[in-house]
Image (cartoon, rainbow over all chains, first blue to last red; front, side, top):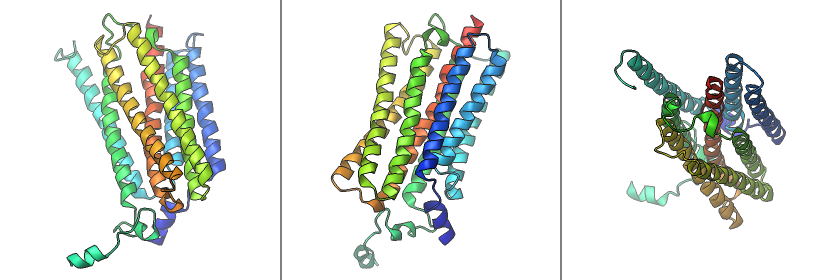
Length: 110
Length: 214
């Protein structure tokens, strides 16, 4: 019990770390805009889109792990979140499979 | 038994007794907010999936590249990200019992959220004026439903932040209620991470791919 309390209450980052994460998030957003603008200058979407996705995942993880304290809090909170994310991805998989497979066999989506 | 229950004072949220009132040793309200966030992942996952499926179905309406103002949306995104920073600084302030700082940061967070929301309303009004409406195409429908629901979530978050600020000004948010502030913060950060995905999946990538296709 004492360990759990320690996990949930006393391990959060300090103000300095929060500001550092905020600056990193701002720089990443700037990078995303630079990548988007580079498409006009001939940057290939095959390079630019994966780069945008990586930056998005990193920003997402930074906010979740540091600002939402998931890195420091009790594992039960993590489970709630991961189950939600897994279900959301499952929904996307099902919808996308239904859409693209249906389109191929002429079942739907015309 | 009934008398015993009614005689016992329920532990207050944030008090030391409150933390130990559950079999898991975790605060019920924090567990509930994580449960809400988990279910909201599914809700926004469904809306984002729908958008990704329909974003190429523009019909006679404008394409993402033609309609989106990326520099404007980038500025809105930056403001919402910084509001998340304001929220954690407000939480750090109340945990350190610095109530003036807490009130300043919570108000700043609400103001940044309001700026984001005002930007979204402006963006919607520009789109409608240009003929890009809810019923223009499957792309426009999925776009307005997704970003509109996100906007409602931001508006609800702003209401909670302003309520916290007013309650604090009235002396109703003592330091021991910092878990309440943390719970509101969790909701606010969730709204932020949903926008992080929307900014890339809804604005940047479709605008880039539709521009490349033209």
